[in-house]
Length: 254
Ligand code: TMP
Image 1 (cartoon, rainbow, N blue to C red):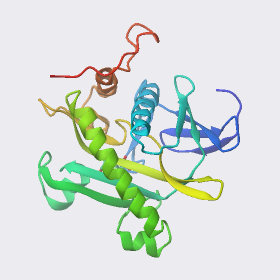
Image 2 (cartoon, rainbow, N blue to C red):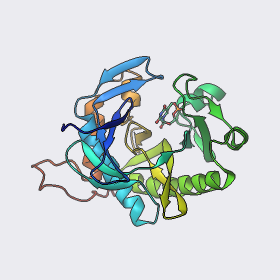
Image 3 (cartoon, helix red, strand yellow):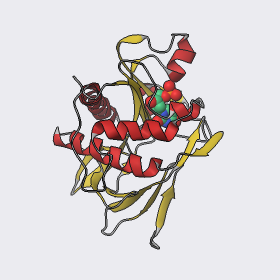
Image 4 (cartoon, rainbow, N blue to C red):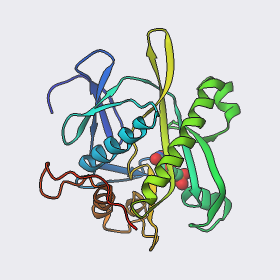
Protein backbone atom coordinates (compact mmCIF):
# COMPACT_ATOMS: atom_id res chain seq x y z
CA UNK A 1 0.00 0.00 0.00
CA UNK A 2 1.30 3.44 -0.84
CA UNK A 3 1.33 6.26 1.72
CA UNK A 4 -2.00 7.92 1.16
CA UNK A 5 -4.18 9.78 3.59
CA UNK A 6 -6.42 7.36 5.44
CA UNK A 7 -9.91 8.81 5.65
CA UNK A 8 -11.71 6.06 7.54
CA UNK A 9 -11.06 2.50 8.72
CA UNK A 10 -14.01 0.15 9.14
CA UNK A 11 -14.14 -3.50 10.15
CA UNK A 12 -13.66 -4.92 6.63
CA UNK A 13 -12.46 -1.95 4.57
CA UNK A 14 -10.24 1.12 4.62
CA UNK A 15 -10.98 4.34 2.73
CA UNK A 16 -8.07 6.39 1.46
CA UNK A 17 -7.98 9.76 -0.24
CA UNK A 18 -8.43 9.24 -3.99
CA UNK A 19 -6.29 10.54 -6.85
CA UNK A 20 -8.76 13.30 -7.73
CA UNK A 21 -11.04 15.48 -5.61
CA UNK A 22 -14.35 13.77 -4.95
CA UNK A 23 -12.86 10.28 -5.20
CA UNK A 24 -11.76 7.72 -2.62
CA UNK A 25 -9.86 4.45 -2.78
CA UNK A 26 -11.75 1.61 -1.09
CA UNK A 27 -9.35 -1.10 0.19
CA UNK A 28 -10.80 -4.54 1.04
CA UNK A 29 -9.27 -6.32 4.05
CA UNK A 30 -9.40 -10.04 4.90
CA UNK A 31 -10.64 -9.16 8.41
CA UNK A 32 -14.05 -10.44 9.39
CA UNK A 33 -16.16 -9.53 12.37
CA UNK A 34 -19.57 -10.64 13.53
CA UNK A 35 -22.03 -9.75 16.27
CA UNK A 36 -20.77 -6.16 16.37
CA UNK A 37 -17.10 -6.98 16.69
CA UNK A 38 -17.49 -9.64 19.42
CA UNK A 39 -16.23 -12.31 17.04
CA UNK A 40 -13.10 -11.49 15.06
CA UNK A 41 -11.21 -13.45 12.47
CA UNK A 42 -9.47 -13.47 9.13
CA UNK A 43 -10.89 -15.02 5.98
CA UNK A 44 -7.84 -15.46 3.77
CA UNK A 45 -8.39 -13.96 0.33
CA UNK A 46 -11.79 -12.47 1.24
CA UNK A 47 -10.68 -8.92 0.41
CA UNK A 48 -9.57 -9.91 -3.08
CA UNK A 49 -12.80 -11.80 -3.75
CA UNK A 50 -15.13 -9.15 -2.31
CA UNK A 51 -13.36 -6.46 -4.34
CA UNK A 52 -14.12 -8.48 -7.50
CA UNK A 53 -17.62 -9.57 -6.50
CA UNK A 54 -18.66 -6.05 -5.53
CA UNK A 55 -17.12 -4.63 -8.72
CA UNK A 56 -19.11 -7.13 -10.76
CA UNK A 57 -22.45 -6.57 -8.99
CA UNK A 58 -22.14 -2.77 -8.84
CA UNK A 59 -21.25 -2.68 -12.56
CA UNK A 60 -24.27 -4.80 -13.54
CA UNK A 61 -26.54 -2.62 -11.36
CA UNK A 62 -25.11 0.51 -12.93
CA UNK A 63 -25.94 -0.91 -16.37
CA UNK A 64 -29.62 -1.19 -15.43
CA UNK A 65 -29.63 2.42 -14.20
CA UNK A 66 -29.02 2.02 -10.47
CA UNK A 67 -26.63 4.85 -9.51
CA UNK A 68 -23.65 3.65 -7.46
CA UNK A 69 -20.45 5.11 -5.99
CA UNK A 70 -18.34 2.55 -7.87
CA UNK A 71 -16.02 3.91 -10.58
CA UNK A 72 -13.48 1.19 -11.35
CA UNK A 73 -11.35 -1.53 -9.81
CA UNK A 74 -7.73 -0.43 -9.41
CA UNK A 75 -6.01 -3.66 -8.37
CA UNK A 76 -6.54 -6.89 -6.40
CA UNK A 77 -7.75 -5.18 -3.24
CA UNK A 78 -8.68 -1.65 -4.22
CA UNK A 79 -11.39 0.13 -6.13
CA UNK A 80 -11.91 3.77 -7.00
CA UNK A 81 -15.23 5.13 -5.74
CA UNK A 82 -16.95 8.50 -5.62
CA UNK A 83 -16.81 10.25 -2.29
CA UNK A 84 -20.33 10.37 -0.89
CA UNK A 85 -21.87 11.43 2.39
CA UNK A 86 -22.92 8.12 3.91
CA UNK A 87 -26.48 8.02 5.23
CA UNK A 88 -26.18 6.30 8.64
CA UNK A 89 -28.86 3.73 7.87
CA UNK A 90 -28.42 0.07 6.88
CA UNK A 91 -31.26 -1.05 4.63
CA UNK A 92 -31.90 -4.80 4.92
CA UNK A 93 -34.06 -6.53 2.33
CA UNK A 94 -35.30 -10.04 3.14
CA UNK A 95 -36.89 -12.64 0.86
CA UNK A 96 -36.55 -15.72 3.07
CA UNK A 97 -36.53 -15.91 6.89
CA UNK A 98 -33.03 -16.18 8.38
CA UNK A 99 -30.74 -14.62 10.98
CA UNK A 100 -32.18 -11.97 13.27
CA UNK A 101 -35.65 -12.12 11.67
CA UNK A 102 -35.91 -15.85 12.44
CA UNK A 103 -34.73 -15.22 16.00
CA UNK A 104 -37.01 -12.23 16.60
CA UNK A 105 -40.21 -13.85 15.39
CA UNK A 106 -39.46 -17.56 15.88
CA UNK A 107 -39.82 -18.25 12.15
CA UNK A 108 -37.70 -21.24 11.06
CA UNK A 109 -34.76 -20.35 8.80
CA UNK A 110 -35.61 -20.99 5.18
CA UNK A 111 -39.31 -20.07 5.39
CA UNK A 112 -40.14 -18.00 2.30
CA UNK A 113 -41.60 -14.62 3.27
CA UNK A 114 -45.04 -13.69 1.84
CA UNK A 115 -43.38 -10.64 0.28
CA UNK A 116 -40.00 -8.95 0.45
CA UNK A 117 -39.55 -7.15 3.77
CA UNK A 118 -37.45 -4.02 4.23
CA UNK A 119 -35.93 -3.13 7.60
CA UNK A 120 -33.76 -0.21 8.71
CA UNK A 121 -30.93 -0.22 11.23
CA UNK A 122 -29.18 2.86 12.60
CA UNK A 123 -25.42 2.56 11.99
CA UNK A 124 -23.89 2.90 15.44
CA UNK A 125 -21.38 0.48 16.92
CA UNK A 126 -21.91 1.95 20.41
CA UNK A 127 -25.65 1.26 20.21
CA UNK A 128 -25.20 -2.10 18.42
CA UNK A 129 -26.98 -0.96 15.20
CA UNK A 130 -30.54 -0.76 16.61
CA UNK A 131 -33.48 -1.42 14.32
CA UNK A 132 -35.34 1.82 13.59
CA UNK A 133 -38.53 2.88 11.81
CA UNK A 134 -39.09 5.50 9.09
CA UNK A 135 -40.37 7.76 11.87
CA UNK A 136 -37.03 7.62 13.70
CA UNK A 137 -35.08 8.18 10.50
CA UNK A 138 -36.98 11.30 9.44
CA UNK A 139 -37.59 12.69 12.96
CA UNK A 140 -33.90 12.48 13.88
CA UNK A 141 -32.90 13.86 10.48
CA UNK A 142 -30.78 10.88 9.36
CA UNK A 143 -32.55 11.00 6.00
CA UNK A 144 -35.31 13.17 4.52
CA UNK A 145 -38.58 11.50 3.47
CA UNK A 146 -37.57 11.93 -0.19
CA UNK A 147 -34.15 10.33 0.48
CA UNK A 148 -35.88 7.41 2.14
CA UNK A 149 -38.29 7.01 -0.80
CA UNK A 150 -35.29 6.86 -3.15
CA UNK A 151 -33.50 4.34 -0.90
CA UNK A 152 -36.54 2.06 -0.80
CA UNK A 153 -37.14 2.26 -4.56
CA UNK A 154 -33.46 1.51 -5.27
CA UNK A 155 -33.36 -1.33 -2.72
CA UNK A 156 -36.35 -3.03 -4.36
CA UNK A 157 -34.79 -2.70 -7.81
CA UNK A 158 -31.54 -4.13 -6.49
CA UNK A 159 -33.48 -7.00 -4.91
CA UNK A 160 -35.36 -7.84 -8.12
CA UNK A 161 -32.26 -7.67 -10.28
CA UNK A 162 -29.88 -9.51 -7.95
CA UNK A 163 -32.45 -12.21 -7.08
CA UNK A 164 -32.65 -13.05 -10.79
CA UNK A 165 -28.91 -12.78 -11.33
CA UNK A 166 -28.13 -15.14 -8.45
CA UNK A 167 -30.92 -17.56 -9.35
CA UNK A 168 -29.31 -17.86 -12.79
CA UNK A 169 -26.17 -19.27 -11.11
CA UNK A 170 -28.04 -21.54 -8.70
CA UNK A 171 -28.04 -19.24 -5.66
CA UNK A 172 -30.96 -18.02 -3.58
CA UNK A 173 -30.68 -14.40 -2.42
CA UNK A 174 -32.08 -14.86 1.10
CA UNK A 175 -31.38 -11.32 2.35
CA UNK A 176 -28.84 -8.53 2.07
CA UNK A 177 -27.82 -5.18 3.50
CA UNK A 178 -27.29 -1.99 1.49
CA UNK A 179 -25.86 1.40 2.33
CA UNK A 180 -26.52 4.64 0.50
CA UNK A 181 -24.80 8.00 0.21
CA UNK A 182 -25.52 11.51 -0.98
CA UNK A 183 -23.63 12.59 -4.09
CA UNK A 184 -23.60 16.24 -5.13
CA UNK A 185 -23.16 17.12 -8.79
CA UNK A 186 -23.29 20.90 -9.29
CA UNK A 187 -26.28 21.93 -7.16
CA UNK A 188 -28.08 18.60 -7.52
CA UNK A 189 -28.05 15.88 -4.88
CA UNK A 190 -28.58 12.22 -5.77
CA UNK A 191 -28.88 9.17 -3.58
CA UNK A 192 -26.47 6.46 -4.76
CA UNK A 193 -25.67 2.94 -3.68
CA UNK A 194 -22.43 2.87 -1.65
CA UNK A 195 -20.28 0.48 0.44
CA UNK A 196 -20.07 -3.01 -1.11
CA UNK A 197 -22.24 -5.95 -2.17
CA UNK A 198 -20.58 -9.25 -1.35
CA UNK A 199 -21.05 -12.46 0.68
CA UNK A 200 -20.16 -10.31 3.73
CA UNK A 201 -23.51 -8.55 3.50
CA UNK A 202 -25.72 -10.98 1.57
CA UNK A 203 -27.08 -14.40 2.52
CA UNK A 204 -26.66 -16.72 -0.45
CA UNK A 205 -27.84 -20.33 -0.34
CA UNK A 206 -27.38 -23.01 -2.97
CA UNK A 207 -30.79 -23.45 -4.62
CA UNK A 208 -30.66 -27.26 -4.59
CA UNK A 209 -28.97 -28.04 -1.25
CA UNK A 210 -29.58 -24.82 0.77
CA UNK A 211 -25.87 -24.87 1.57
CA UNK A 212 -24.82 -21.47 2.96
CA UNK A 213 -22.28 -19.68 0.77
CA UNK A 214 -21.80 -16.45 2.71
CA UNK A 215 -20.52 -14.94 5.96
CA UNK A 216 -22.87 -17.12 8.04
CA UNK A 217 -20.20 -19.84 7.59
CA UNK A 218 -17.91 -17.58 9.65
CA UNK A 219 -20.63 -16.35 12.07
CA UNK A 220 -21.77 -19.90 12.82
CA UNK A 221 -18.37 -21.66 12.59
CA UNK A 222 -19.53 -23.86 9.72
CA UNK A 223 -16.03 -24.19 8.20
CA UNK A 224 -15.03 -23.87 4.54
CA UNK A 225 -15.47 -20.11 4.74
CA UNK A 226 -12.86 -19.17 2.09
CA UNK A 227 -14.26 -21.85 -0.20
CA UNK A 228 -17.77 -20.37 0.05
CA UNK A 229 -16.58 -16.92 -1.09
CA UNK A 230 -14.58 -18.58 -3.89
CA UNK A 231 -17.61 -20.56 -4.98
CA UNK A 232 -19.73 -17.41 -5.29
CA UNK A 233 -16.99 -15.74 -7.36
CA UNK A 234 -16.57 -18.89 -9.47
CA UNK A 235 -20.29 -19.08 -10.25
CA UNK A 236 -20.31 -15.39 -11.17
CA UNK A 237 -17.50 -16.23 -13.61
CA UNK A 238 -15.05 -13.81 -12.02
CA UNK A 239 -12.61 -16.13 -10.29
CA UNK A 240 -9.50 -16.05 -12.43
CA UNK A 241 -8.67 -19.76 -12.63
CA UNK A 242 -5.81 -19.60 -15.12
CA UNK A 243 -4.60 -16.09 -14.26
CA UNK A 244 -6.06 -12.64 -14.83
CA UNK A 245 -6.78 -13.28 -18.53
CA UNK A 246 -9.16 -16.10 -17.58
CA UNK A 247 -12.06 -13.86 -16.54
CA UNK A 248 -15.31 -15.00 -18.05
CA UNK A 249 -18.97 -14.09 -17.72
CA UNK A 250 -21.41 -15.95 -15.48
CA UNK A 251 -22.17 -19.60 -16.24
CA UNK A 252 -25.92 -20.07 -16.37
CA UNK A 253 -27.16 -23.17 -14.58
CA UNK A 254 -30.02 -24.88 -16.40
P1 TMP B 1 -29.46 -10.22 10.19
O1 TMP B 1 -30.37 -11.36 9.90
O2 TMP B 1 -28.32 -10.57 11.10
O3 TMP B 1 -30.23 -9.01 10.68
O4 TMP B 1 -28.78 -9.80 8.80
C1 TMP B 1 -29.55 -9.47 7.67
C2 TMP B 1 -28.63 -9.27 6.47
O5 TMP B 1 -27.83 -8.12 6.65
C3 TMP B 1 -27.65 -10.41 6.23
O6 TMP B 1 -27.55 -10.63 4.82
C4 TMP B 1 -26.34 -9.92 6.78
C5 TMP B 1 -26.43 -8.44 6.62
N1 TMP B 1 -25.78 -7.70 7.70
C6 TMP B 1 -24.74 -6.86 7.43
O7 TMP B 1 -24.32 -6.73 6.29
N2 TMP B 1 -24.17 -6.17 8.47
C7 TMP B 1 -24.60 -6.26 9.74
O8 TMP B 1 -24.06 -5.60 10.63
C8 TMP B 1 -25.71 -7.15 10.01
C9 TMP B 1 -26.22 -7.32 11.41
C10 TMP B 1 -26.26 -7.84 8.97
